[in-house]
Image (cartoon, rainbow, N blue to C red; front, side, top):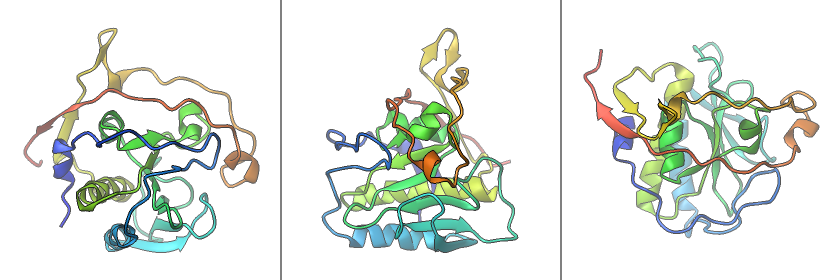
Length: 219
């Protein structure tokens, strides 16, 4: 069983980051999983979460496996990329993911180098919580990937109930990294389901500060 609370001990991802595509679609170009079974286990975990269905992706390349929340279930605002899709796994041999992460979990994963911001989110052209998660290379990385996917599901389903509180430590002008004002960006042409929207140029990847974690009693 994967507990979201494990993420309070999220370590830094080991080694250098893999090279990335220079433009959308955002994808890693190296450090693929040595065994596709790691990705199958990641997918099995995600599709076993309550209310999750596998559906054709609305935003990723054809063949990607999309995690969607079943129709009729409550859905948190701003927690999906499109429709009811809160994450998807990319095709072999890569196995990377895009998923939605809320704050402060997003800054935690960014600071520990497990994820990158999506270029559309960076520019303000798409959902702000969209991040790219590198494919797991071993069983340890798989467990942390499962935990991050669990956070995305918990946000979408409304189950992220404050069992763990993360607090920012990087101070900037008297505010934590989590409290900085959002940068405004021009609107991307077309809607989020259009080809034009999906082909916008990639921006510089944002790197966020690293938060600390506190555990608190459940309400």
